[in-house]
Image (cartoon, rainbow, N blue to C red):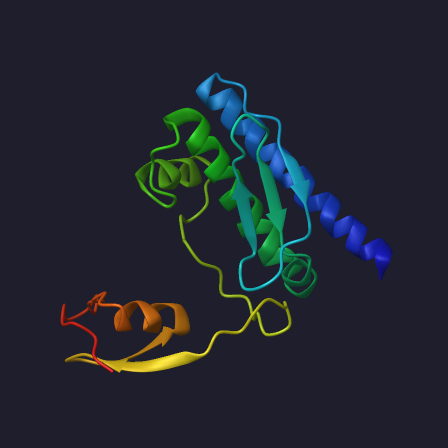
Length: 167
């Protein structure tokens, strides 16, 4: 089991570095040296952290990798590498999944999807209570964080009908 885990992690590292190398060649610019860890928990498959003045860190979710090896390796390293490339090429004021990130994903030959479809029930992390809100067209489940913000006066609008969500 440990050998398989090590092999999967090695493949993810190799795929991440391959994507960064491809982008460096395409843009004619070297990419930042990156630290790669497998310590992420919760619902995210991967995450890039940009430290001020330090090297960036890509964190991967080991549980989601072991439960979904092939789709994880096909989707997640390109996704996270694209964040690093977009930030390096276009600067820090871009949207995380904006036009620049999508163009890098297209360069990689990957559909620029924001979210994965992996089952996250066994990947740890905190579980937040959900609150039911309504609009003109459907029912929404807001997390306790957003629920608290509504209580404090924030207004959330339905993306489909544009109505304010009400409890």
